Image 1: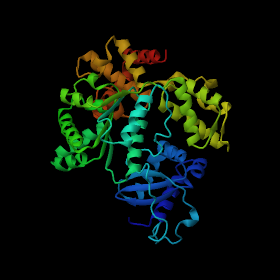
Image 2 (image 1 turned 135 degrees about the vertical axis):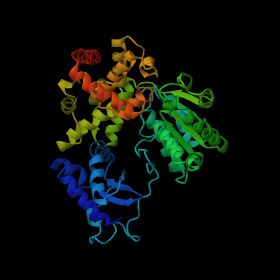
Image 3 (image 1 turned 30 degrees about the horizontal axis):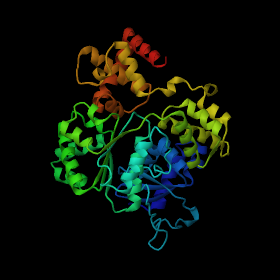
Image 4 (image 1 turned 90 degrees about the horizontal axis):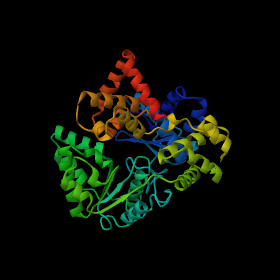
Length: 452
């Protein structure tokens, strides 16, 4: 570092104070601290997981930009739940934040893993018939990695809690032995690792990284379909890890047998352990999730209010997002009691949420396919007939503008397409829709179909 940690953080906070509202600054930033800046990773302490969630969702980019403007280097942001008393910080700018005889860097038996949330544990997971098999099998895997079910393949639609289950495995294995090498990665990131290794002629390093893992977790593995070199590398990595007794956990939106363009040898290995599905959460499970998450954030919610929220949201991610919005409004009033009045206000329209806020990617896919009388497999497939390309680009446009998804997310949804392809499609539709009234009417027609 080019300047002391405390001095750097004070400068960063000074910048942020001019970027956010005073209420947000006093509520979210005043009680934070920069624990360290090592290897281009800024570790920031905040007093609660609720505050961390709010900082990550709303201000992570603001913090990152502020730090980088002072360090002149690109950094990654990592949050830890920890209270740091302001009076315990060093008084002199020339001192490090924590000296060797002072408070030591926190030992994080849970959550101190790249991209793994500390609060995604088995204890914080609400369980019902919809996810009980995945829950029980995952706990067995975490207790006996490499010996219970290997691989463990978890599948189900978006927003049902697959990521929570997998990260709970990672947290549990890490808590048993922090020396375990645990890799949690998405299939897109794995693909990027393979491509970069080939580009830099450094495949040996990449192979060593993945094949020395004690636990390898790959999320959304369906997106490697059709990528021959990536599948080849995963095949050999898979065999190496199984032979060494390491545990493999995979997730997908469908079972191995239904992933098209997946090599038969990989499909066979994916199905060689235990394959379990996670169903969409039923009303009872959604209610339990609201109660658990509210308790985790330190707020009280009655059963009636929890049911009210559960009626309005259909998947786990939407539930958490809605609850965080309600908690933010509750916190602004200085209360820890979530009332029905606050929930109704947060949801808007007298508690009946406008359907535009409940749209999912599948709504866009189904409506676009219905409008053009094509199948989802055609929309997501490789064919480039003019009619299919048009429908595909309209879907890209709607996913970007209606759901605010990133180009990478849209590419993954539409068959694993590159983000530059998506960017081109969205920009083309934006231009043409402003020039061609027929196309504009088609897009508006599909948009109306999505909303019933």
